[in-house]
Length: 263
Ligand SMILES: [Fe+2]
Image (tube, rainbow, N blue to C red; front, side, top):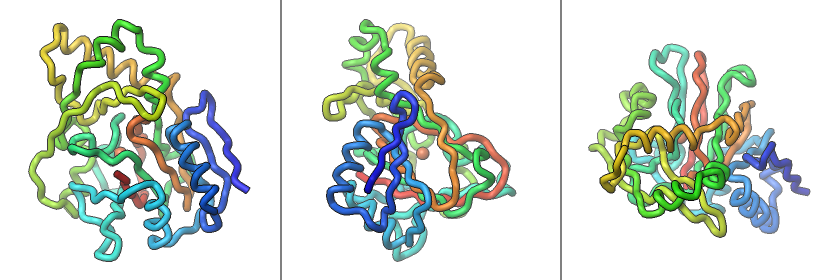
């Protein structure tokens, strides 16, 4: 039996189930819950890479991360998100963002599976509901953003957090750029789809550009829209990049996560 335990204000939910035993009916429930809560996590899952990849395929076509080489030849879709105790810079993904928004068709979903984690509570991933953020936008601003797109780059502010990994496993690519509408409709809900970590400007000329940007980033990342997810070993999380921002919290130590992004 699958059990759904929503977090406060429905910012994500825990799903209690053994993923090795899920039925098609369970997958349907998981997809529905993902749409509603934006992020789901599953504790105590001992998954092989083969099972992990196959499970991810239930949610769509797997994407290859453009900036880093995959785990190995057999599993090129798994990206190793690693923090080493010798790393000097900030942790991978340490600023609110949505994954690969600088591509033409960014991945809808991201999965992380924890292989090696520091003490529980030491390296949480923070999620920020953009459904809630949209709901609380003043109507005048909702109107304003309706026709505006944001411009994003793979060399945006957050790229400094992946420098050490790019040095080791980088694909040697040129800067990737794309633009996307700031207000997004997902089934029947609206969300703010803007990644502060990759943002380089608005596409339209706007009065008080800087002020509007500051307002948007500040609003999107308010504490009241956030949930901080603690990690333990063998935990899987999946989130919808269109309705959740996420960021790594700073920590010193070793951590290995296996990531899959889904189109
Ligand atoms: Fe990320």
